[in-house]
Length: 246
Ligand code: IPE
Ligand code: IPE
Ligand code: MG
Image 1 (cartoon, helix red, strand yellow):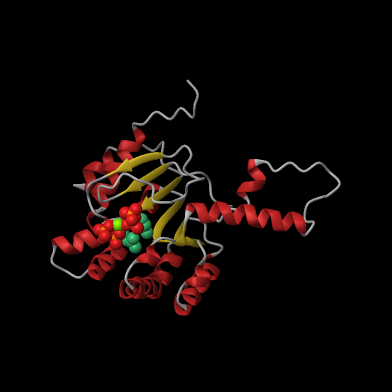
Image 2 (cartoon, protein in one colour; image 1 turned 90 degrees about the vertical axis):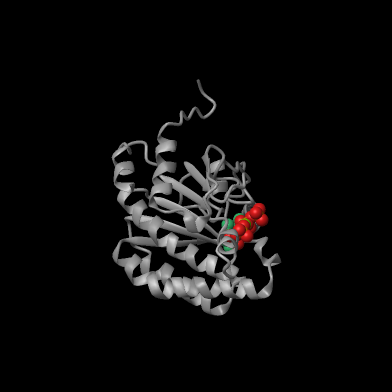
C-alpha cells in the first residue's frame, strides 16, 4: 500500500519544515478499551515511524508537539506517565537516532520537567548536535504565546544589558526578533499536520506557521502510519502557495 503511495510523490516540493500536532492518543486507547497511557505509548512508536519516513523523503526539519503549556491541567498520574514514556523513548531510541543522523532540539521551558527527563534531553541534544540529516524539534512544555512573550522579554533584557549599540537608532527587525524564539535555528513551517479530527492550532508555533499549509485528518495519532503520512505529503504537493501574491 505505502509503496504505491511512494510512487505518487514527486521529488519537489517536499516540506522543508514539517510540524505535527500529535493528537488523539486518549481516544485511540478508549476505542480499544485500554488505559490512556497505552495510547501515549503507541503514539511514541509512531514517532519513530514518522522519523524514518521523513528521512526517506529528505524532510530536513520536524517539530513535534509532545506536551503543551496547557497539558499541566491533566491528572498528575497521566503527566507522570507521559514523561516516563518520553524517558523510555530517549533511552531506547537515542543511539539509533544518532546513527541515522538525527539532530535533536527542544522548544519549551524544560526546567519544569522531571529532573530525569531534563538530564536525558540535555544529553540527547549534546550527543546529536553535529548531526545533519534531519533536525527533530521536540516541543515540550511549549506554548506559542509563552514563546513570543519570552522572546520579547529576552530582547528587552539584552537591550537593558546594553547588548545593542545604544548610540545607533535601534531597529528591531523581524530577523532580530526571530533570533529570540526557541526556533531561532529553524525555517518557517511549510506543512502543519493535526490528527484526530480537531481543527485548531492549540497554541502551537503561532509565529512560525504564518504561511503554513494545514492538513487535518480524522485518524488518531496512533493510527497515523506511513500510508497516512504519505497521503498528507501528496496533498501538500497539490497546494498552490501564494504568500499573498498572485
Ligand atoms: C495527544 O493525545 C498527546 C498529548 C496531548 C500529550 P491526547 O492525550 O490529547 O488524546 P485525546 O485528545 O485525549 O484523544
Ligand atoms: C495539543 O493537543 C497538544 C499536544 C498534542 C501535545 P491537546 O489535546 O492538548 O489540545 P486540545 O486540548 O484538544 O486543544
Ligand atoms: Mg487531545
